[in-house]
Length: 448
Ligand SMILES: Nc1ncnc2c1ncn2[C@@H]1O[C@H](COP(=O)(O)OP(=O)(O)O)[C@@H](O)[C@H]1O
Ligand SMILES: [Mg+2]
Image (cartoon, rainbow, N blue to C red; front, side, top):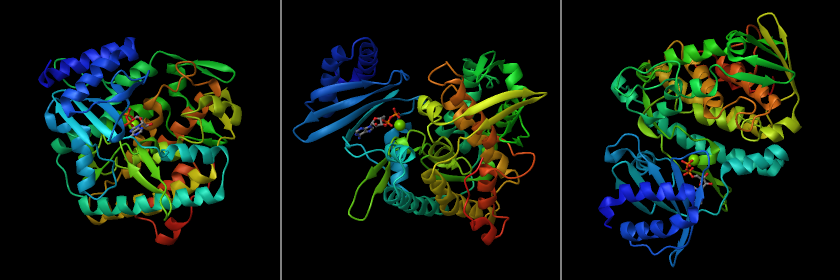
């Protein structure tokens, strides 16, 4: 078989790997030999049980240990893949891991990276959530701060007006708006509600501590969390996100070069003599025209508000935190002791001061800051937890307690409280270019 028929070979390898990963190793080794001239030894496939699109693993050669990754492309043109996107980031001055071998074939890229032995930043932060250690925390926050300065330099250097077509062409929308809609096969307009919103929630029943609610009921209630009532119920937030996060509407704030999906499980933490250094990887959603108000949303939600534990370790969150609920007319009344840990609070403060605030100030100075920027940022933050994994207890790993914490945090991100300021509101106040530096520079306290 020649390398030219590789797409069908990769399809066969994927199919085989799902049934029997060991049996897929021989054809995979042959493919790596034909494409790259490698003679892999000790080839192992890691199958991600949740993603049929993801096939990766490790192998060795006399030159060292490697990680390989099959990357299926949705846009069929050759130049859309991860390699091309890593190059955009690297040329804009961002630290990003680069593959050592790439094969770009229609519909599929195969990438080979050097195998990394260091932890992901997410692993280091999770350990700090479990047991805070001041010295490790300070060095982690310093690393975040150094990365933030590079991000801001890149954002300010690359900020530019974008057309609606350019905004539309960015893959980042697959993390946001695309998850709300179905795309009919005939290329007609997207249908709302659809996508993950429909698959995860519509028509479903929600087990919360001490009660079970239908989606119709739950999604129409206002949340009151620890005494603070949130203006917009879940259904209203999804509707608002569908309308405002349409790709072309996001062109109004210009575009930047950004990774777009820089949650810390896509960031390596490399120890150096000068302290830990952070490097991005997995830039599948990166681009040169990323709508600037979306660029930092994923990193802000998934590295801060998604922790400690409730999003990625629901069982741990259930043991660690309390969350109870009761009904009042029109309300879901929640009480919880969930709160950010010290390292998450510190990371939010860095993100606010060193990235968001200068970015928004630049947008404002360039007359690219829409009047409703808070709404855009809030709705983006809201879609992060709700449409990344199913928040419904029992659907995957969520329990009634972690589900209730998750839904509450999602509402706190998406909606302003009717009165007072919670942690998300204080965060937005702190980055608002319309507010004075002294007021905005105040650290964001932890709170409910
Ligand atoms: N170069 C590498 N060396 C070792 N492990 C890696 C390497 N690149 C990725 N991994 C591991 O594989 C996981 C998935 O890889 P990633 O590139 O993030 O793909 P995706 O998130 O699209 O599945 C990472 O979270 C990391 O644990
Ligand atoms: Mg990843």
